[in-house]
Length: 135
Image 1: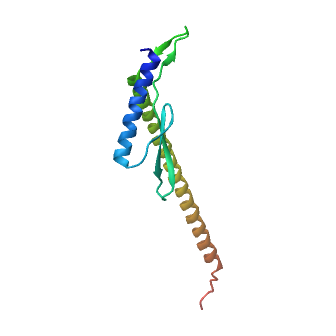
Image 2: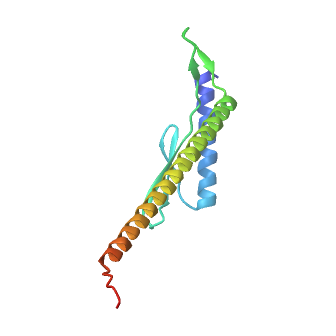
């Protein structure tokens, strides 16, 4: 059996397994739409029909520059993905912290401006008061 035939067999086995699981668990069809994809009808929260497409691939790996491939390593790819997710979460947390600090700063500036406006209004009212000497 050639490598391509082995990959096709593995891919078809996984597609069949996934399709059977979907048909059993979700009581819906899993339709083959290409040699490596199945489409599943779904309902969105509003009750409209939409589709989930599931693709199964057997990656070769990265090119090595000599006409060959460096074998695909799912463990290292998954580890890199987790590191990427953590970095994105940290960046998001920093951005949120910065955003909250700006909101607090802006709120404080608005309160100070409002207090100053009220003080000026009170001062204007005081200036309107006429003091008359008492006899």
